[in-house]
Length: 68
Image (cartoon, rainbow, N blue to C red; front, side, top):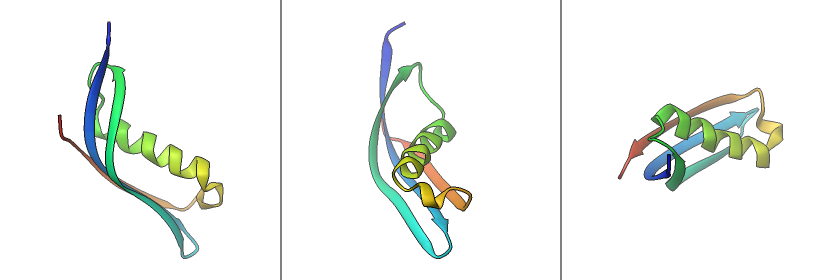
C-alpha cells in the first residue's frame, strides 16, 4: 500500500506550571491510509514534548481538522 498524504489544520498545546508550548498551523501527514484526527493531534503533541520535555505530566489539548 502506498503512503497517503493528508493535510490538517492542527492546534496542539501542552502546559505545566504556567509555562506552555503550542502549535497552531497546517501539518502534512504521510501514512498508510488516512489517519484519525486523534492520531494527528497525538503526533503533534509528541513533537512538542520532545522539544519541551519539562512540560511532560502537564495538561495537553488539541484539535485537528482535515483540509484534504
